[in-house]
Amino acid sequence: MATHAGESLKEPAVRVEGLHRSFSEAGGVLNGLDLTIDSGEFVALIGRSGSGKSTLLRALAGLDRSVAGSGVVDVPERVSVVFQDSRLLPWRRVLDNVILGLTGSDARARGLEALSEVGLEGRDKAWPHELSGGEQQRAALARSLVRDPQLLLADEPFGALDALTRIKMHKLLKKLYAAHNPAILLVTHDVDEAIALADRVIVLVDGVVGSDIRIDLGSKRSPGDPRFASLRAQLLAELGVVESVEEEVA
Amino acid sequence: MATTALEAPIVGVASDKTVDKRVVRRRLGPGPRVPGTLWIGPILLLGLWIVASATGVLDPRTLSEPWVVVETAKSLIADGRLPDALATSAYRASLGLVIGVAVGLVLALISGLSRVGEALIDGPVQVKRAIPSLALMPLLILWLGIGEPMKVITIALGVLIPIYIHTHNGLRGIDSRYAELAETVSLSRGAFVRHVVLPGATPGFLLGLRFAVLNALLSLVVVEQVNATSGIGHMITLASSYGQTEIIVVGLVVYALLGLVADGIVRIIERKALAWRRTLESH
Image 1 (tube, rainbow over the protein chains, first blue to last red):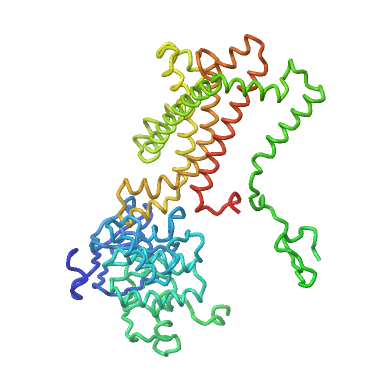
Image 2 (cartoon, each protein chain N blue to C red; image 1 turned 45 degrees about the vertical axis):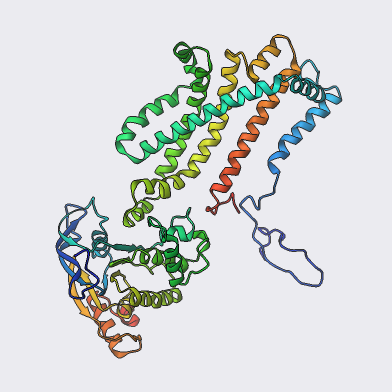
């Protein structure tokens, strides 16, 4: 699976069966979750706080060695993670952050290419603290993509950005997805972001998949589209949120 | 208007034609760096010495006049005694420093990166920390004699402790999220040490180095005065038995210069190595 994932759309990139994870005796965060993500498929994962989104993502990233649990997790060989914070090493210049851990004589060239792809050409020698929040997150995306991932895990990658920057980042992520076509699991609490970007939106409820909704809106998606609005209403209802502000107050 | 917390703007040359009216908050950080400020204090002190000697306030038997000290220094340099002594002392101090820094750094890395290493190393180092290196000298003399190995090892022991403590502390203070990142990009342990641990621990290491340099000089002074046949300390001890204040002062000035130069070098390294930081020091 590791070698040929990516070539065949039929073969799943991620297979999770009966995943249990718990942080205490009292109750599990993930309770027998099953999930399959096809190669090259863009899946958004939404859910309320504490629904297990990050726990699932960390299980897929292999970062939960100290968490109790059971189940099967099968992921491809090359997995990249984008965190909510850019997590750039402050003592390494931007390019060195992008190619962190890469070996080979072409590493720098690939890093520069990745930087230009995310719109950061010419900033390769900058220190991370000299970049804006959006630019830092672009550098983090470049660091993920330069590794040519078969699976990209993103844990609320735009959560800390302002609304305008976030829209730009959505466009960038779409462009990068089209160019590289990795399987993507995007954890978000922004329903609009999920609908705008993903092929499939999964709502996590009490540690299992609550609903699994395919988004068939084509590539041009506008929040003004009535189908977009109805999807948003449906997803918000799944999350137990009433959309109208007035009703909330009343 | 609340003007109490304000100060005049520092930016630009105010021309009468352009209006530059602004509200500027009172600065709470130390402000921009002014070059050469490190030397103002020592120079003032030197001036005070010259004035006190010239006016006769300072008795030459208590402290020789600066010009006498300069003359003595010149003749000591001319007959080769000072350069020889300085070379011997500088060699001892730097050899002890290099050994102590290397050992302290390696111990800090082992103890900081593995629980087994911590269990084996941290306790003994803390015990050693409670015993001043100079208190170990009698034992070291019994073991190693009064030759160079004893002197260099005494200096190295004094250097090792601050390097270990501050590097270990800096290392353990590295944000664990960076370790997590290193895991997700599959860094090898060597690359993790090179890209994350060492740079992350550098601020702590450099602070330790500043203490270490002064410890090296302190140990140098003691080992040379107790039982040496060469070096600045030997020169001072000899001068003391003959009541030659001016030679003692020359020796002390050399020690002071060694200390200042060494500390200055560490500060320069600090500024270069920590260029990535945005702190009160750099702005």
